[in-house]
Image (cartoon, rainbow, N blue to C red; front, side):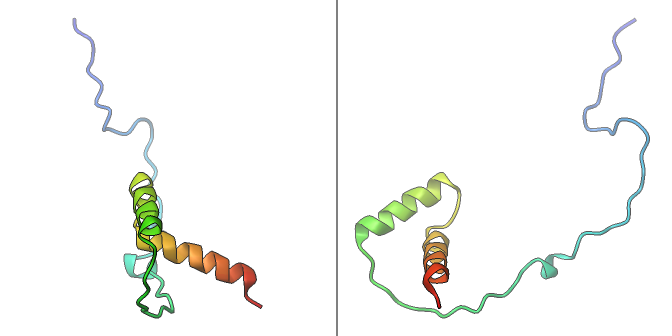
Length: 77
């Protein structure tokens, strides 16, 4: 008599149905009040953000935008 094979994808124990409480995807996206600008940055700075973005699986422009937002938020009157 062999061992019973366990299917790890199957639930264990008693199942309980729960109400669907998650919002639809369109309710998870919040539009930001943004302004498109053109800016010349130091190549070294851009390379730094590109390297960091790659390490953190992010986008370098998003990282620069977040940095500017935090800076402005700290010093805004």
